[in-house]
Length: 141
Image (tube, rainbow, N blue to C red; front, side, top):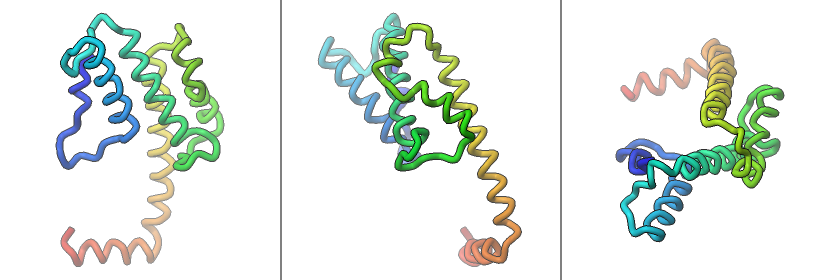
């Protein structure tokens, strides 16, 4: 896996979780083989472990009950995300597939967009929204 692809251009917000984990794996790769920022393409386990570690840290920050930035998602979906709770178990789970992790991530994102859109459309009907809209209209932002 070419980790340099995870480097984001200036001005684009980055995920501290993702950048920290990738930097750690890049350092391990460099220390171990004095290589560039590229891990062996044959090392699928290492690539997948990076994704598992990212998923685990995202769970701890956003999906775990009572987490600092807990997102609003349905209870059943939060239960599915619980599979990411224990990193040691994730790293040892041989039947976990990258596609399954991607699908679960997409479900969470879709749920969040749906719930936020409901709130936004309710807000758009209020006087407070008109005040905010006027601020942006007046400042030509």
